[in-house]
Image 1 (tube, rainbow, N blue to C red):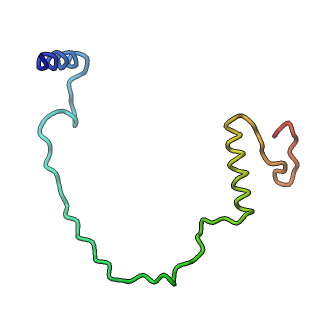
Image 2 (cartoon, rainbow, N blue to C red):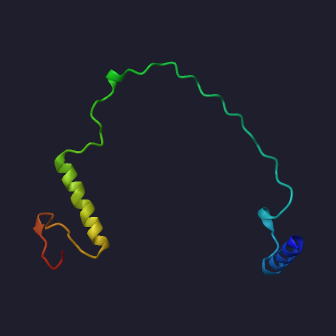
Image 3 (tube, rainbow, N blue to C red):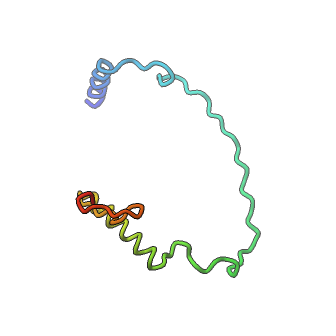
Length: 99
């Protein structure tokens, strides 16, 4: 029964789809070209923990953290249609209606 279903489905698909042509047609596959990869070199050097920086570069000071939080809040409110842009742009005060 399964063979009959598969053959009917294959016949219906052959009616609905064009025959394959070009590079993607069914047939013999070209031989695979395998290029050898050299083995990795062994790691022989010891790491010295005293030479690395103790301060993590992604830690923000409070002022940078506050500016980042304000930018994220403005981006979130913009998705809701609320504009909380800056009060001054290039030193010129922006009117309330434009914000």
